[in-house]
Image 1 (spheres, rainbow, N blue to C red):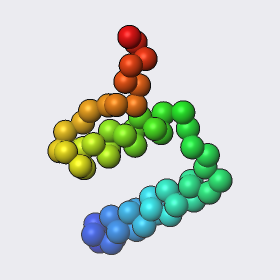
Image 2: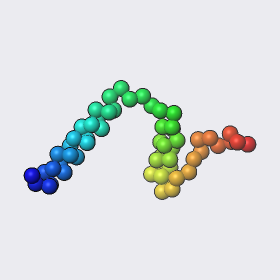
Image 3: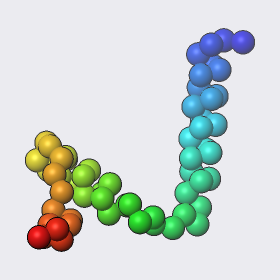
Length: 57
């Protein structure tokens, strides 16, 4: 079997498994922290966190 064809088939299978895993998925506790890090990284180019600012003071 052609290696390129095998890789394409595996990538399609992985993609289908990922899409199937999204069905009825509920948000988790850590999603806010992950989302905030992704937001600041895309906006400023570096990661920071303001989510829990002032909690420890």
